[in-house]
Structures are given as structure tokens and as C-alpha cells.
Length: 131
Image (cartoon, rainbow, N blue to C red):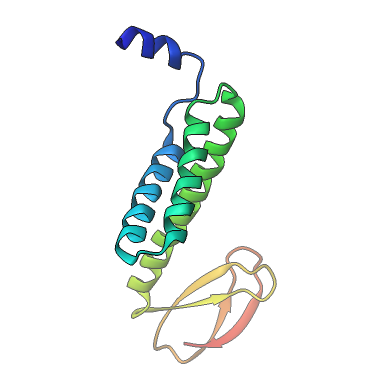
């Protein structure tokens, strides 16, 4: 039996990160639909499940690889921006952040120094801001 399943799945995409995320999303939508008794959640979960199985059993691995890479890039960008936001919120008590008017580079300046002249480290533009 295991051999038959192995031969059947040869050359197919299988479960990748996007399919795992979709399966979790299907589970959540089914649970929400079950508790709220709104049929729309179950319908969306069914459509998503059909698409997930289509991706898993697909033999067009190059196209599925591209889809998975787009998802991984999206997830990476969200993670990086969330970590940047957390780091900035941790420093917000001690520093002010300004954008250079010329190149839009973000510049970090210590708080409590009054009105100072800030020099952009990237383009050397000087601008005055109140810290």
C-alpha cells in the first residue's frame, strides 16, 4: 500500500509551505463556520480545500514552485517588517526617527536635544528638526 502511494505521488508537487498554510486556513474556516452557522465560511473552506488538493496533486511542479516562492517571499517580508516595527517601538522612548527629505533614508536621533541639524548619512543632506 505504501509503495502504491509512493508511486502515485512521484512527480507531483506534494505538501509545501503554501499548502500547509492553506490546510490550517481551511481548518480555521471550518471551525468558524461550524460555530457561527454561517454557510459562507464552509463554502470558502471547501473551495480553498479543492484548490489545496489541486496544488498537492499537480504535476506542474515548476508553476507550483513559483506560487510557493511568492508565498514565502510575502511571509518573509511581513516577518521582516513586523520585526522592524517591534525594534522601532522598543527604541521609541530614547530616539526619534526622521526621513531625509532628499533620499528618504530613515535617520535615528536621540531624544531631548532640542532643535538640531541632522546630516543624512547616505546623501549628506542637512536638515533641521526638533528632537
